[in-house]
Image (cartoon, rainbow, N blue to C red; front, side):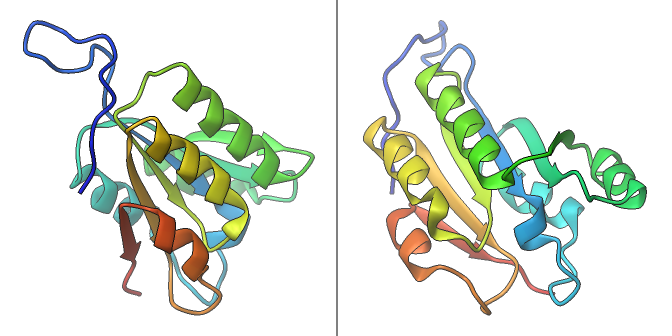
Length: 153
């Protein structure tokens, strides 16, 4: 169960911008053992509400094929020469602070995003954590989210 932040609303009572922001930790979930399907990630999050943005974060070593697969799956690609976790966390936190989302979904196995999920919950946003498998999945991260989704391979 989750409560919604009472920010700017339209005439129907919905947040003017609204929707769910999906942030994918590429190096963490797009590993060969998981065989993560980016279309499935989008689909499972879209089933929880309107997807407002979908961003895939990759490091500078990402192959052209991986970048193209992300684009084909409808993701906005963010490539960083530094730590992907930091860039994703800053972007997700900024989206929360701008009050432009009703929910936030992070696809990862990494507990580093726990403060982002906690901030979103304090702001009344729906929080979703998507993991590609049981191996290495952070139970600490999934415990603070409203919903934890385990993708089937």
